[in-house]
Amino acid sequence: MPNRSQIQARAATMRVRFEAAGAQVVDPPLLQPAEVLLDLYGEDIRGRAYVTSDALRGEQMLRPDFTLPVVQMHMREGAEPARYTYSGEVFRRQEHDPDRSNEYIQVGYEVFDRDDPAGSDAEVFSLFALQLRGLPLRAATGDIGILISAVEGLRTTDRRKAALMRHLWRPRRFRVLLDRFSGRKPAPEGRAALLEAENPLAIDAPMIGKRRAAEIEARIDALREDRDTAPISDNEIAGLETLLNVRETMPFALEQLRDIAVDLPQITPALNRLEARIAALQARGVDAEKLDFEASYGRTSMEYYDGFVFGFYAEGRPDLPPIATGGRYDALTRQLGNGAEIPAVGGVLRPDLMLEIEEAAQ
Amino acid sequence: MSLKLGVPSKGRLMDKTFAWFEKRGITLSRSGSDREYAGKVEGIDGVSLILLSAGEIPRELAAGRIHLGVTGIDLVQEKLPRWEQQVEQISPLGFGKADLIIATPACWVDVDTLDDLDAAAAAFRNTHGHRLRIATKYHRLVREFLTDAGVADYTLVDSQGATEGTVVNETAEAIADITSTGETLRANHLKILTDGLILRSQATLWRSRVANYDADDKVTLSELQDRLS
Image (cartoon, rainbow over all chains, first blue to last red; front, side, top):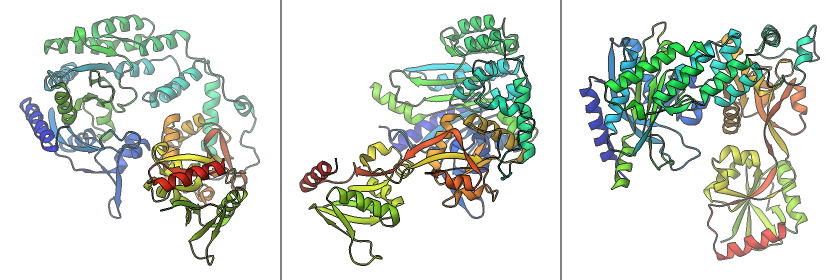
């Protein structure tokens, strides 16, 4: 196993390469206010991050990733365009797998640039591929933006679209919602009676709690509206399902997705972005013809990405976490920007795993 | 050395545990006064009794400081990550039965399932500017259950007792707690979600996989297991 100083030396080398590509070194604090992370990830983050607290500052988390503090810093004081690099420890609770590290070094590169998003995507991916050159890795790519545009363009109510969008990163719940909105899954028992009742709140139970009667009534109204809304058409559902199953090399995936766009024309702008990205990758010497593309890639683990996503995995080592991951997170900059926003793309590498694979190969 | 058996130090759980062993010819008792947490074992050699709080028994088993222990399935699964690796279930004891469930106010006529809870949580967060609070002491079990179900926009707030009262007091909107008859829930105008059962628990005798067993301990353990089966 590589030791700590070897890992740090490798991290430093990699960071220097990112600096040579034009990035400025940043060094966010180890302790991050828990509130922002909780807002972004919800309660799940408590299962993955170490939480500590003091009476003055309240709950703090040991940095579970760099992206969030780097985005905050950029939105606060960054000049445009900007490129950042960093290396340092991140901390992840591991309650299920003792073989996974709870503390490891990440090296990252983030690009905040309004011009030429396809070029920025290709820049990040090709720099990562260069850092990883020679290792037996498989690259996976995807594009959450295609799925987002497919959902946003469905011919149904905004409420349904918002519900689907909210669960885009939870495939099982997304599936349940889709089944319900397409009329394939019956409403829960007793639902019809409740919605038909003259006065649904007239029951033998006192109103207690902070969720008031008006809120309950508002949800009943929403459920009534939904009951009276036509199901999402079979055509659109079939298109969405075919889309989620696309798994091909990049150019063939694009071809299949163009076919799907006949039923789901709303994805066309996102497909044009994919096409531009393929060209930009090729211009940077990446062989996009051979690059795998999965339309569902990044849906379970990459919560803030909303466009291009990628990961590098060790061949024949399914036990290892990804060696590098990254993607585009335009919406995150909006969320943390207090009104400001900027297109952004970036990712992180794991020097410890790179060294481990190199050792194993020798 | 002897096999160390950890038993809850108080109340009905202790009495029923003593009765369960008594039926199998093993007499457990407190030695000396009621205030003393030492115990006596008759009817089998090589076993010593240690009286502990039920909540500490999982940790003591996982640390290998006791070989055997009686405590609830709920506490073992909440307190021990990868509990199967640390303890082995020897026998359920048939009492202390309770379900860990999620309950909401009964007046939430629009909420029957986890689906509804998730939708209500999203709207609640929009209206109130904070996530829907669920009061519990079973943080790990509840979080894993809700993550698995894909419920979002909630937050867990710690409640070590009188959890049912948190809704009326508006320190939480829903609760996740253990219930046996549902009586306390009803008295506090709460109802259980139809798919809100997280875990069925009861008092159980566990064996530590971590503790050291010398040759004598192994003989005693196998005799004990024969007597208990």
